[in-house]
Amino acid sequence: MKKLNIILVLLLSLLISCKEAPKEKPKSTPTVELDEVTSTYTLRIAKKREVTLDNQIGVQPIPKLLALSDKVLVFHFDPQSSSTQRMFCDAYSHRLKRLWRKVISIGQGPGDVSRRIKFFQFHDTVYALDTGNYHLSLFDCDMNYKKMSKLKGVSHYDFLMGDGQGKGKGDR
Image 1: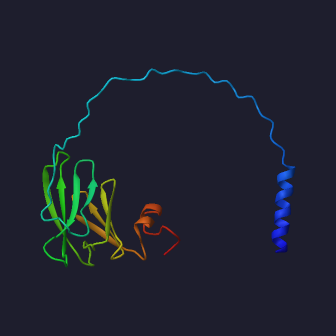
Image 2: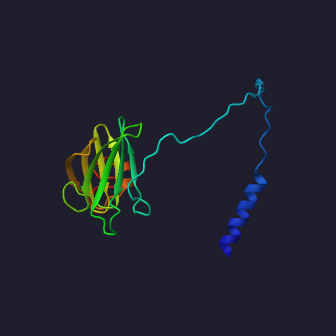
Image 3: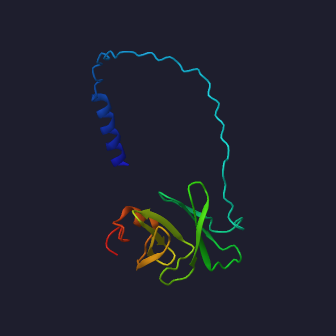
C-alpha cells in the first residue's frame, strides 16, 4: 500500500509540474482543389475460364497453387480413399490449358511428401517444405525430384525467416 501511495504522489507531482507547450502557429500550406471525376465506367467481372479438379469436393487438405512464370502448378490429393497414398501435381498454362500431371507418393523416402507440405519457388527450383516428415525436398519447375534434406523441428515460418536451410531460429 505504501508503494502505491508513493507512486500516486509522484504521478500527481509530475502532472502538476508539467506545463503546456507553447502553441505554434500552423504553417500555411497551399490548397489544391481537384475536380471530382464523375464519368461512369461499367465494370463487369465475368468468369472466362475455369479448371475442375477430379473429385476434389471435401478432400482434405485442400488443393495448393503455385504460380510460376510460365505455368501454374496445382497440388491436390487423391480423393479415392481416406488414407491418401499419393498427391497429384497438375501443370496448367496461364490460359488454363492442362500441360501435364505428375504423381508424388505420400511417404517418408526421397521424393515423397506428407499431407503437411508447403511449396515455394525460387529461381528454377521448387522447394517443398514438409513439416510432417521434417524434409525439405527440391524439385525442378517440372516437378522432377532433385534432392532432399532432413530437418529438425522445422515449420514454414523458419523457412521464410531463416537462411533457407531450415535454421531459422538458432542452430538446430
